[in-house]
Length: 117
Image 1 (cartoon, rainbow, N blue to C red):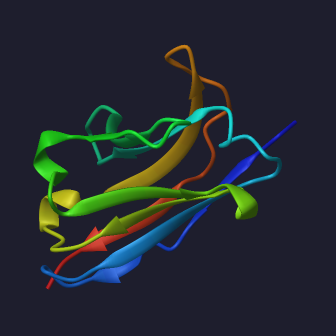
Image 2 (tube, one colour):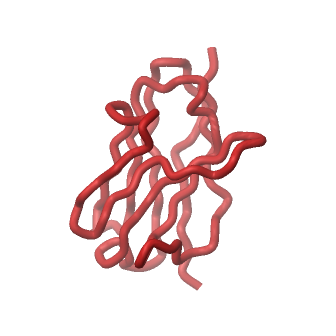
């Protein structure tokens, strides 16, 4: 079945930046919304950012002004640029595509983001 693969995570100091990538096996982000989620240990998965097929975006309040979601339809890839990272941003980050408000793909392994001195 179609898959999404997250990459780009790593260890970064507070205030640093990372760019996450979500590569799709097919041309899906042209017709579906795309979103990034994160899940910290012992916490519920939460949506971090969303971009619609029309290019509209919205963000979790705690990341507004720091994170930017974008899409490259030609590369079938969605990105999450994360700036001014904080320790509370530490989590496994996942991506998915949505249609009519529901996720369309199985959850992958995600990519680990660790913000620490």
